[in-house]
Length: 164
Image 1 (cartoon, one colour):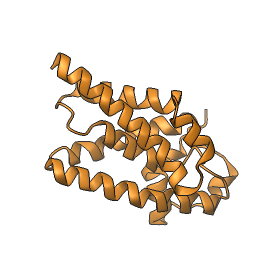
Image 2: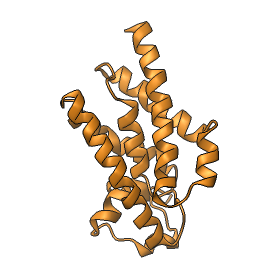
Image 3: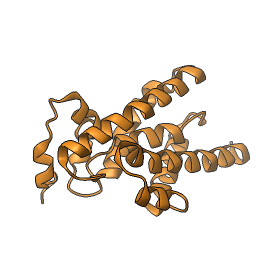
Image 4: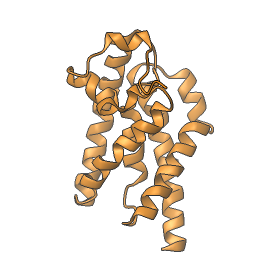
């Protein structure tokens, strides 16, 4: 069983390049199966570090990460010569960080947030699916996961309000 993707487009990238390293989710996007899920998993240690930050600094980090992500994802896609390749998972990292804004502390809430984000990222309800198909380049790669993160954030907050 091969754990790493053998996609030839990946040969155009290098984990030594900081842009590629970030776009590939610290290497997690190289998974042969479900790279988006592995990219989301790679966001967990980052979230655990960031959850100690004040609310305003956490939001600032997400804004900076999202804006940088437009460039990071666009550059990696251009270098690969493939639009929104599955190995590009920086957008999943930002999506989970958005989901977890002001989330209650605890493993249960992290698991629920993870599940909600993956659900919306995979299902891509309207308008996420439309944006995914019609908006391109780095912004197009980022926007569907940003919106999936916002939907998951909303659901997580409703659950937290009612059950925590």
